[in-house]
Picture 1 (cartoon, rainbow, N blue to C red):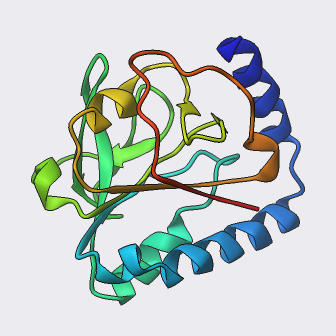
Picture 2: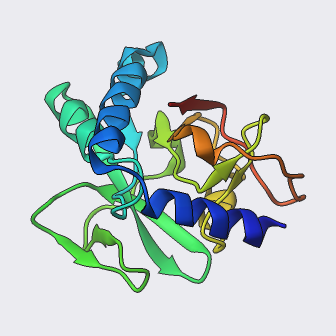
Picture 3: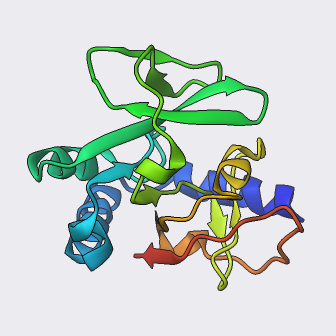
Length: 174
């Protein structure tokens, strides 16, 4: 079931109108920026998007302008990732075709106040379907900070979570 939902959402993501997507990204970013959890955070982690995903570069730019430390993920092994500082001068394309830091200081989970979590589909309880590698579920399993995701309305789905799935605490949807 998860694979069929994953494929259906990927098709929807690929056929989005670019202008409408950009506007939704801006609105969701502003909504996230207005939240107390963002405003009180000193260190936030987000992701560098694929073309069809929520454009996190708006969030990154504003977080930097607000004096926050911005971290992005780097895969370090099968099912394992860490977060390193975002530095546009030191990015490389990963095996998965997304940009990630080429080097930098790894930050502990305890140092991250807020993680902006990607995903393809989310159910009403905040459980997510990602690309299938389990990276975020493993990372979030013992994370104690705040998690939030930004999604388009068609990414809402009905599915039963699995034992290893970790929900995000809040989902912003447009």
